[in-house]
Amino acid sequence: MKSKHKRAKSLNIGFVSTRFKGLDGVSLEAAKWAEIFEGFHHRCFWFAGELDKDPEASLLVQEASFQHPNNIALSGELFGVQTRTRTVTDRIYKEKEYLKEKLYTFLEQFNIDLLVAENVLAIPMHIPLGVALTEVIAETGIPAIGHHHDFYWERPRFLLNAIPDILDMAFPPDLPSMKHVVINTVAQKDLAAKTGISSHLIYNVIDFDRAKTGIDEFNKNLRADMGFSKQDVLILQPTRVVSRKGIEQALYLVERLRVPNLNLLISHSAGDEGEEYFNWIRETAQRQNVPIHFIYNRLHESRTQTEDGLKLYTLWDVYPHTDLITYPSLYEGFGNAFLEAILFKKPLLVNRYSVYIVDIEPKGFDVIAIDGFLTQNAVQQVEEVLNDAARRRIMVEKNFELGKKYFSYSALKKGLSTLLTSFFGTIPSGNLAGGMNGQ
Image 1 (cartoon, rainbow, N blue to C red):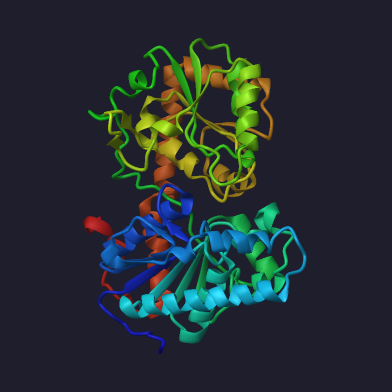
Image 2: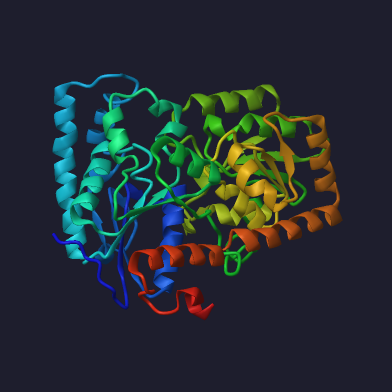
């Protein structure tokens, strides 16, 4: 297959990852990029092992899922050890060849002009897919963007491994036709220091202009539906239950607040990182008499109902009914829940994780910040915010305007416009700066 560096009125842009489905950060951010690209009058297509996209514009290859049994078994022999057998190496490259053929099919079926590798060349959740995609880009010279959300060296479970040669080659690859995008300054510096690869910095964003954030006919009775009264104070932890989210700080906060009718809501389950921390949080809440509610069984990717008529809400249905958001993460690639709290104009308690310190805090947001542990001063600040409507209003309005300034779709449009121009010289689709819907 020959490389296609053509200039066209409309580009065919192919997104590649292990999964484009559900509410994980990679899927959500990829959808935002696609929305911007389509606003520029390009067409987007999808390749993954799990998909909820239009079948007419996508290629589903189940073996590309990081949750496929073959990949789970292979990963178990590659991490936590220092050497691999010849048989394991052969399995990597056998599966790579199969996926490589599927990637070529994807390029040809949809006449792809530009590839966007969504985290699949950053975190080694699927080694054969990463190697296959690297080889396809190297062989075709097709313009490609690596959109890197988190790198393997940021996750302890990947540090001891039997594939340092492959990680150096493909996670991420340094190829002439490929440009790299990171979502925070820390990652940008680490990528340059560890690999010599330069990158563009494009933050995660939210559509501050068009997002629907209020109470409507569907979600107006959410409190009662979930067993809460109007007098209940709802504190939301909008994350999965994994240890790096620091959820114990939210427990300590609720335990120490001198505010009646407190309830701590946890939006997600443990996900794919085990139940041990989840069980510890639940047991700790019971010991401390913290009223904790795991509401993930009432949430869905989209608004729907069960067969017996029970409403299933989205996380964005929950935000309008909450009084405070807790976000005490020890580490985040960026911080989508931070942006969502700002969007919904909710007061926020946040731990000063490294990316927050470097990329978010300097913007001047008005939040209750802690440094890894909950202080009495932070507890008092939360009490003041919950009890003082005027203070709360000033805080959330300021944060909303700052979020709109720094982390809106207009910032993303500029970043993607710059990337496209760097690949194709002149802008292929006319006035990219105009963006969507003539905005």
